[in-house]
Length: 200
Image (tube, rainbow, N blue to C red):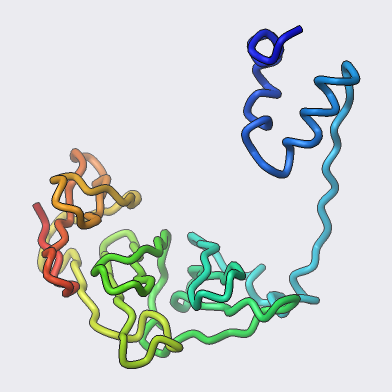
């Protein structure tokens, strides 16, 4: 049976085919016939220095923040957004003070101002914040300029989520915001390297 026919008749396996961790399992299933693939998960948070993260709620992002080819962790909590550096086998909290406070529901990390450093955007029900990293202190992520949009300045703002998209094709990432009982709104990137996004 060729690969196309195999994927067509086994569509639930085809998703795993394109994912690296499952590629070998799919190859075995294709060559040896029907097989049961079982993944085992174990709790290692405490061992890795992430025991407190289990108490956090909200969004989380895994991304290499410092260019060492290890995935670091950014996670929302009911007391702010916490940053953990991957030290290779354990995580060390390096949260800048500016990220503490407030309860946040979603977080995204991307280079929003084209300086080569990761920046952070986060949402709560009635606010959006953008924190850019500073070239003056790249070891302290997201501790630079801050932009805030909230319901005080925009009555009725009730953010349900957040996404990244270059919606106007200018080469700069904008933020897409689904607003409850409304349509999508866009926080447009100023395209000047600052965090002064504007609500379109």
